[in-house]
Image (cartoon, rainbow, N blue to C red; front, top):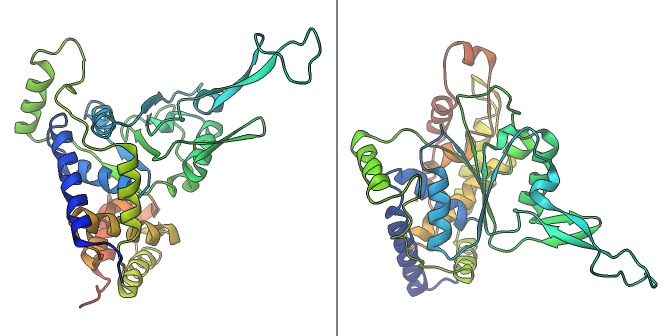
Length: 335
């Protein structure tokens, strides 16, 4: 039985609706992208956004941070980016003598924290960084902590990584290892907006705006970090029937045997489906998740956890088409 009261669920859904409204003041269209980012936030997960430059990924991150009074940071990943550039490092502080120094001590080591010590981290073009730097971010995403010279430093909570990559320009990039891809709760594909939305974007970006200034003036904060943590806790307590969990597992297992997929999703795929289903139920003020919640978010939860076979690539088939076929083949439980 769920311990969530109806009035608490309604209040949570009302706050999330207000949050969506504030994001809409800055981000025109792209409603599926906004919805999926909010689900990732509620499920305490990270999101990988794939799309060409200029589609509003940075704007979405900034608007989300402002609407929730959260600290944010942006890292532009480049081939020469070092792990210490994102996690931080220790420096010698000549002004402070170490405790064990006598007289003319040279000073003590001081920790200089990197940009990952924030609430919302935008990792732009993450696939441009070498493997060593990507692995440093992997520890941050998985453990929510940074280890510097033997000292473990916890990250502020809530903490979320929004990483982006360009699907077209691949020269000089380093494909993300499967272990890191698996840590992203979902992969969001963002495409060009329809003509009407694109006209509205241009109008909003140029009307009284100087240079490339982001249109964030109208966005008002509706949540703070404690409220976000509370909402995440509520999402954890959404009831999930064993049949719904079994359905998520069967969907995930179907990807491992589906023709055209050389590698299927692992257990984290089923876990992601359940976490997203819980978050989707909270948005709709429900204290229980349904098979439809699982099915609706199966593509973003699984598309980065599978690999196309060579034959499927030669035939021009896509991951989403094959995943949808595998999803349709799995019978959902009935009430």
